[in-house]
Image (tube, rainbow, N blue to C red; front, side, top):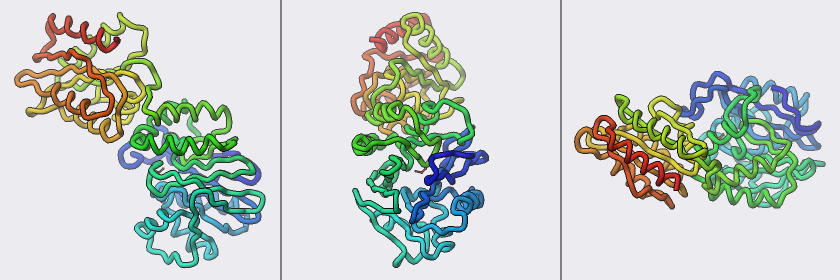
Length: 386
Ligand code: FEO
């Protein structure tokens, strides 16, 4: 994929459209890109490597950009293997190259690679500047966005922020799709737990004059940067992006589904707010997590199972918990043919999260929905909308 940044800063990353699951857990219907860049100046800096799945293509891109020269520095923004897999290869291929990272980078790097780092590293800290000639890279630490050693670099001459995983997105670069949809799914599933750390990074970025954002996944961002930065601000503050309701249901034989669909119809009659509904058994969990964070309100509907809660709903709630779900209003619908327990467990999950308002009523379906349940759903609809 040809991506133009400038005469001196080149894209040398690769698209991966054959990976089945990113991080062995996220479907990526349009693939993913592993972005890497090179800054050509008196000194040459390579900005991160790529996943080992695409080593050969990346080396071709690198050599073409180098045009016979040799790189002086490999900047290591992030050690996760989708970006760091080729560090040892580069270290061996270019014996004079210096690896540039921070103290945490070089503490962790030997866990991945058995290489002698003596005289081959430059350790940087917050605010340090690497002078390439005309281009100058300033380093800013971004711990836990999304690993502890993460740092970003600001190139002050061309005003480019190399933002590591920040502002990343699923989808290969040749995919024509809405940025926010797949960036949001990426953000909440990969960085969602680290909102406070993303906020800290945004505060640092606010002091910079940024013309271009070069993330490690997804497109290089060059226009209307406030749109992307404002979305990141909303997401990382755990504020809802959309005033609406996400109905997340799981159903074994369809009876809980009927109740969820009935509530959807009731809500549709009562409000113009956006309402999204998902069968957790048959939708992408990562998309469901994304929607839970996107909307201001959520309805959970699930049956009881083995004296507890249907595992599909439990998995969803577990993911919400580890991603730091908070600041939302929630309603609960349970089903139980005997000894209903699902509602109690959903409530416990929600009570364990910060600033969750649970509707005072809940609805218990006993096997199949009855007329009285429809009236209860109507009350619940009023409460979630209030
Ligand atoms: Fe794209 Fe956290 O690595």
